Image 1 (cartoon, rainbow, N blue to C red):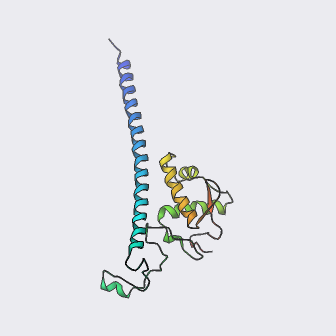
Image 2: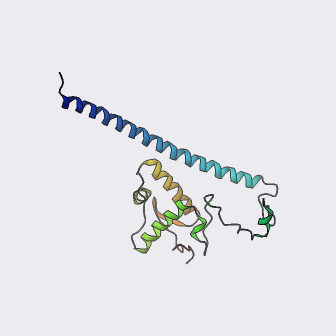
Image 3: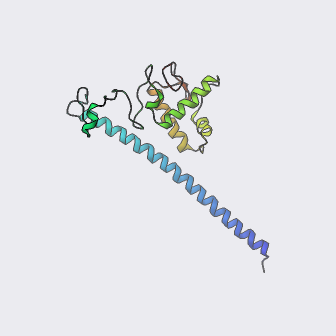
Length: 178
């Protein structure tokens, strides 16, 4: 007849195996979710670009103002290059505030601005994930890499060495322009 301690050890081992299996499955699902979100964002961007190209006036919305609410007709129009929250990353220009970017992009810029201020040099996406307290798994790192590359393409960040990101020349502080 097995001892009570032996039975407890068997149950503990079975529970530990189950927990490990569920953690692996959760990591796999989390990675799959991040990849699906990234794909969804890319399709949404592609759809907006197609909508712009296929617009009756060739995507030129200058001079046309559509308002759903007549009370909004007196509101000043937003600048053409200002981004709607969480929709796109505008091309950086002198004086453009970080507030045009979504919170995720602002977080990347703030982290790199702090490092720049402290003369600590560029960061890799793996290092960023660790700084942000994320699990350093490929899906998270690739999501950060995608955002960082988008910021590089729009002039907010620089990538002087492959995979190592820092603020672009001229981009500094929350105001973004000074």
